Length: 158
Image 1 (cartoon, one colour):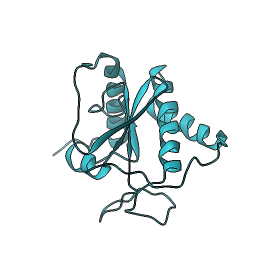
Image 2: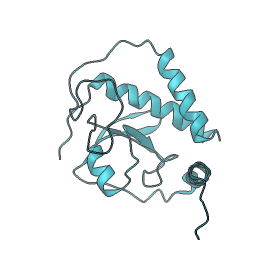
Image 3: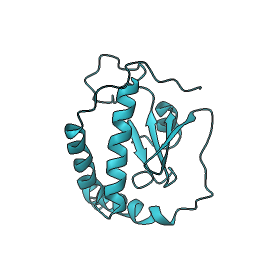
């Protein structure tokens, strides 16, 4: 008989281990391809627009709208990745209230994800565990009253 694994304990341990290892990642390790495009540097981090469907199919099924090196072991520690699409497939969708499921995200949404990821990254860099850092980033989103930069769609070559 198999021993029952407590899923949430396992996830919490994995999150802590990824966070703990992030500062020691090999800075020469680079993940690149036509699915990833440099957008800008912000808060000392390199911001990339990525084809999230490619990321979910090839690197991690749990990749959402964005991520950074303190949460995803395959993302270099000085990078933030943001999906260019609201995703939807047969098993899961992004959970956003947008009516554009499967469509490109707006530049405003893209920048909101960047702000969220930076806040989460900074909290985790200071040693705050993922779930608490995620909640801090969500609260920061509510505080931000910056008007939309643009509702134009974000493009990335495939």
